[in-house]
Image (cartoon, rainbow, N blue to C red):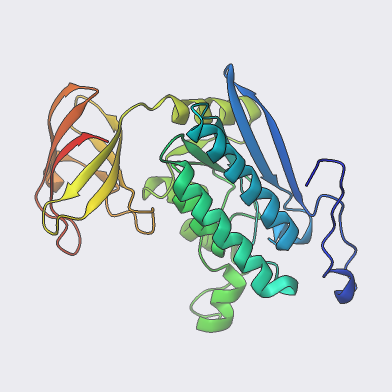
Length: 288
């Protein structure tokens, strides 16, 4: 698909919905900090940023082309601007298939180059695209952003208004807002809603050099670990990145059984973790 092909979704008019020439997905290639960069931006104002056959194919194709460049020795930086409620219900399985392609492409691409997800608007990021956000190497959010698998209306419908009132905005943001997602480790950077601040947060993610592959001391299963911040007080922000389905380590201090015992070089870090969650034991991290 070329930039002037103006391919519209063939399914929206059947639902009396006016289609859009870019199907709510803008793809761009340029530079970030002097390095080649690919950007996919979802337009939250069009159909709630929902992912259909065409828009999903555009993002998946961009990621796959970036993967080809990376495998050829020219890895671009990748930014995904996520403002989406998930799959477009009018396109059902076709939209879900496109989202699955996006998941697969992110998982392959991040082996070669960082993929940074960005959530800034009040539409947030939900449904299958919240999994895409979790698959990103790093995630940047603003206080106004939201992140969750199910949206407030869906939860209210299933659990009842007494359990989850979708109109109670302070409550919703206290559960799925950008600030709480950052504090609980589901996002890597929290930025104010400002272009320069967001750019700085993204640059900080791209500047992270320590990416490790560790072994689960209990099961021997290989897992990706990103040691993102260590300071003099032995406070470590660590994300267990086994396809980012579950972030098992968030903010821990030495008193919580995480101690950084040595940072000998960029090539290795030794971490002692007594016990996390359901029996996850980690002892040593080496270069990927």
